[in-house]
Length: 533
Image (tube, rainbow, N blue to C red; front, top):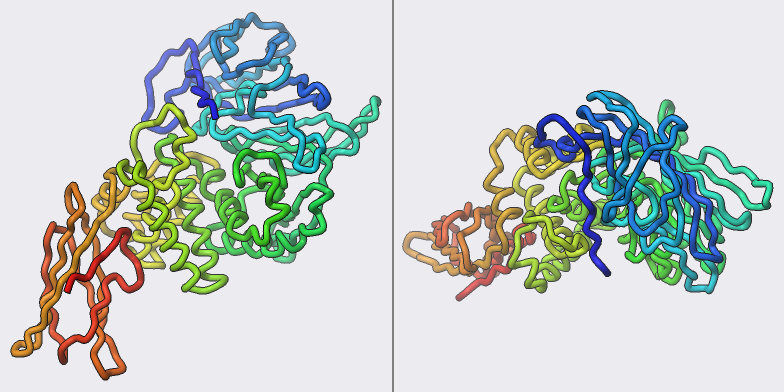
């Protein structure tokens, strides 16, 4: 992939910066109304995007990200505005000075063949399709926007496409109407502020199937339909592939909080990723039609509806708040639905994947913003991020952990957050300071490599357990569980030692000589533990 560096939002502004993500920008986009007239044969479209925004400061100009397309005109309240193209932006003269707090609306008329973001592709079955594919910063290839996850906005999509095509978009379907030329226009809209990279639509020949619903029978609950959308050639398998979709949605709804959007559509598409968590319209790769099972993929993308979409990382280096959460919550689903052994195996697999990634091991989870944002799709943000949550759960206990997730979602729904926001909530729920935990697992690279030895003193009935951390860098702090088994007996003793130094020791009173010692029996600590005789 060619990395796209998003041009900075350039505005004439008076005022200072804020530590809250996006608050240093002089405008806050509140809504996009995006109208596209597709021309599939030419691989192009005509577009009209209205951007509604609030001025945070006095300003006379505004600039929005847009590359590779021809801008015909820009208006404000029907009056043409002067504009210029500067790099990857459209820079507007607003016509009159606006004050802080003013609500403004500008409309950009444009079009052409997009280089990226809006994909005019032939499906694996040879049929034409058009799918938006925005992550991480590719939305500005097909509509003018502030292409930054910190500036979330509501969206309306008005798509003109061939009459035989189905059109799916974010939010709820508002209308569908036939056009005089025989095509049709479909309108989707969400009032919820969502990240720009999840403002999408898809248009193709698709079969729509019912995957269940959420809350339709509960008094006072909003009914959320769950549907699947597949190519006609693959649709016969839709019911099997998506058989657990409603169960997955219901599980996270009960575990975390109310599902945040108007509906959920699971869509076979030409996305470049295995799955993309677009708010209320998850795009899955074309290969899902041939999959034996898609439960893990679906659970991961559904979990993103809460963490990643409704609660979004305010800055790219905090992407673990999205990918680590979705990865771990997928495991939690399987733990509750299919049993602890499967969940433990998933964590073992995640541990191995992380430790087999030297670049991830050598870097902290949270570091500098990379030039290539796709490099953030790494074992730190996925597998280690999941392990951070797994270890946090063990540290604070299930009740505190899941209460913290629920409160984090409730407080930051439809907004953005940073790691310190999540840390604050966990600390308040737990009643103890946890800066050491977040610092060592997220802001430092690597993991503990532990060697354990033990000896038995028959005269004192004491086992002397010695723990040594042998990884480079400073020692980690963690509780280390161990189980002691006795020869010829039907019982075992469970113990724990708090490790924080390079070398630690613990004397344990035992009723007899131990036959076998198992270190970290439930795999609660990231990294290998070796028992040295």
